[in-house]
Length: 75
Image (cartoon, rainbow, N blue to C red; front, side, top):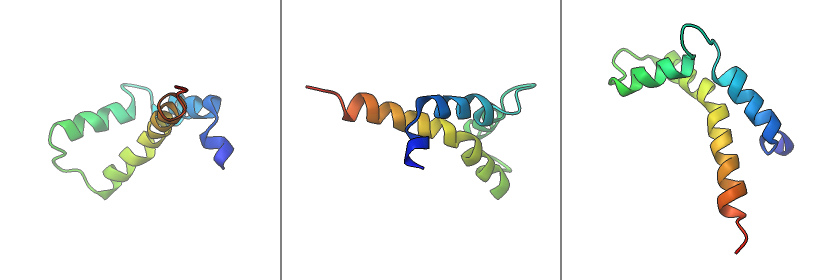
């Protein structure tokens, strides 16, 4: 499991597929983020779970960038 979350190719593939699916008319995560930015009025538990589900690949990517470039930065 550790190898999966630290593999650039897997994490980017997850971002491009699961993170952005469905693609039309707009990426699903983008619609949910706009809904949250608008006050999240009417969002239920399933909608919040959906944000987590589609946002997880991007959180993994942010974590990977942080670990590789910030924490392991050589002095």
